[in-house]
Image (tube, rainbow, N blue to C red; front, side, top):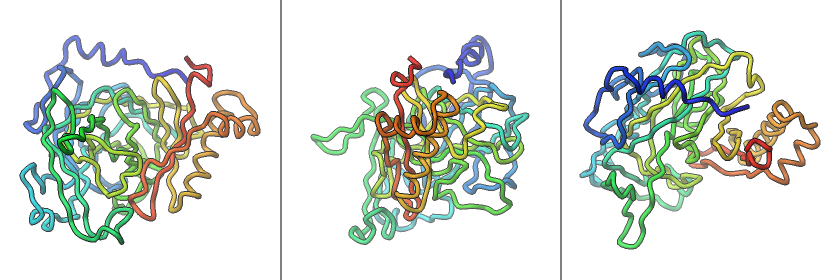
Length: 335
């Protein structure tokens, strides 16, 4: 399938209203989306019962500001005493939900990330009882970082400097449930995927489970390695500009989110073990290759072995984890 056009964004640049600015984010490029959502338009559960804060047509470009993961309980000046007082109740504030007109169960919502702008600070921490090595690292630990919009580096130490590569740790649509589900684990609706490949220029495909899709975004990360093993990335306030396109009757083979860039196509799979998530990821890629590239299942399985790259996106939400598989578009004859 061809990459989605950004024509809609180009048209918007010609003359819509100026977006609302929030003090936590310094804009690096003037963009004028059609709709703006501030950090106050938020929730932190997954449910079909959470009312939308915005209704948009397919093709809309939205600007959304997101708060860092503690919902402003921490600041750049916070210390260990502040960390001890952090409540997990407001964790993962998500901006949204956004109702996409015409979206029905069985459709696919394509979310193209056009722009991500990082706030001027971030934090990373070790919380007792949380993290992949929670049994080893049992004491709390906190680092805060000032983020310069010019050098775009995390100054981890005098010698170690990490380039920012921002993305949303949590993105997704509402699941078909009246229950208020935690945002901590990844699910079929997306959720806490913590996949550092979901950066600017990526289009993410979400299966729609409820009317309107009800898309939300948050838990923004200035940078994170594959795995997010200590439990946190560099958590930072952020500004996202994204385009929402409804796909009717296309990609109906999607059971969990998938995504693509100019360079590759990828599938995602969550599970409570690496084995379970990996098996699902391989099967999803086989299904994609059969449906979109006309391969037999046997050839698709073989291509996964020859050109499919398995990656562990995150393992920190034990026992929940996310595995992805990428296949190069050059290999697929798509570029």
